[in-house]
Image (cartoon, rainbow, N blue to C red):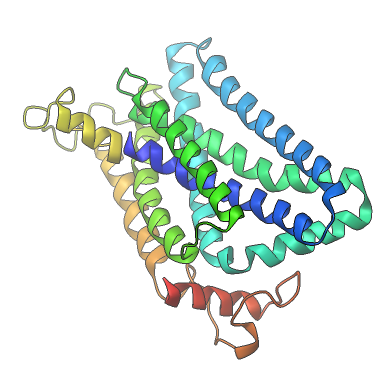
Length: 303
């Protein structure tokens, strides 16, 4: 349940921050007439994400067992790829996300109502679709026959909405770079479990061999139906009898990805020297090429 709460919190907070930035900018610049199309775009994006999630859940129930496993495994791998890209992207752009959104919003204001709806829809819709896909894959991987995983996701999203409101009202201030670093690292661990489970699904669908080749079996020590077995499965997608392929995939993903994400320099944090003029990361609506590495470097040090 905790892993699913974390997913709902992390993904929901990103969307909440985007909404807060868009709304606050229009209010502060006294362009309240543009709020309605922004809310329309946000509403359409949320409806699309919910529809996508429902289609995944109910559409897959009409398939055969092998088809369900093949679909679930394939989408789990896609979800892990998207969430991995997302945590690295947010790590690099968190400090200048506000300026970037302001630039896009200014351009949309000049183009008219349709552009405002599209801007809000694209900004929130991407987060919504990623969230729906990864939540579906994670809930499917950690499902224990109860509503716990889904409740965890909903609680995480509710917390994210509350935090977003508090941010907007100015009642809450946290170091977002630190927040996204810690939650991103934990999300990478969760993604590793989802990826391993996805490959197990492909094995059950007979698309990948090795279903009977167990790496180990400690079901006697950690029974899956025990409270601690359920806890480990809910938090880490732990399986007491994984296949050799599952363990291999889990390790090959987790170790290098986490190392890159937490690295002080390189892909996770950008390269280059910090220039004094770039330290705030908001020099205009569109960051220059030299701004991105400087901002990312600052984000790493502040975290």
